[in-house]
Image 1 (cartoon, helix red, strand yellow):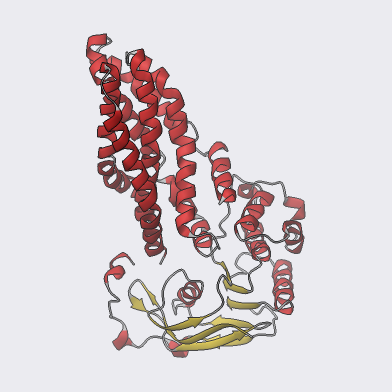
Image 2 (image 1 turned 180 degrees about the horizontal axis):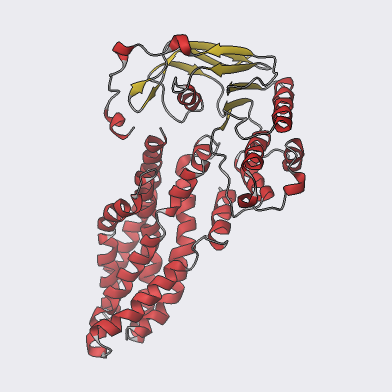
Length: 218
Length: 208
């Protein structure tokens, strides 16, 4: 498992691995929004939380199809399926590698991008905590979508259609948490929901994704 | 000791049966060569034995975690070096000797080269070296000699002989003569009859 994680991380940072593309996309998106809606604090501040979370969602989506598609093309997936490593474990490790290469850089960069969108300083901790709790669910749900669409031509598009609706609960509670942070409200409810969704996803999805992979490998 | 016993096996590809009624056993130290025309179902049979797809009917008996499978795709990452590729598979499969495997397939001189820079034959040799580090007793090989030159084919045959001598077994689909002391199973008589072609195997066939 550690070997698989190390290989995936190493592949991500080597040429053509796509490390950093997600953050760059996030940056572009956050930089474009003020051009679109105008640079006033009054216009930006109410939508900042939503833009930041939508940006995180879309940046995460960019690299999802690579989770299994490349391994399927070069035959590694067949070999992993016949290896002593349980396929459920391989799914979990690959989702973790996706989170480390996509989710973690987003979280680190998010406070900076919050400033671009005039997010008040008081809401920055809420932004960080909501992303920290929410993004693992994004990677894991994405791994499920990638497992379902592996081997399909133009699977990436179908993947987006499958996965984005599954992101809705995380999006709702993530933005709600930042909004309450902005207004100084009670954040306990969104924190608990966000953590609960992520915990449930982490527990269930590896099995569902592994089952989907087994069907697709036939 | 029998490493692999196949009883009355039928396999299907895309919902269509290819071969049926296949039975054979493979003991330690033995090799079995599968032959048959294109499309008869050699690859499908091998994937079924490797556990990548379920049999339509019949039984496959073998010890747990016995199979090392090698097919047309070698499972190599172009961005990783030859050694890194092999070390990864050695770690996943719980570890044979990487440098010995490199020497066996004459890859020692290429050890630090990225796999993307290898020729087709060199990639294939690296894919076959993976069998040595997998330390699995039963090798299931689908056209292992594709794009190998004559010297590499001889080297590969030596590798298989060494594996058999150590109590391993090999199930190989190939069209060329490897010079192995092996039984040959021609699949042509086992071709599925036309009347048994359409037989949906349930819900999952929708995804096949």
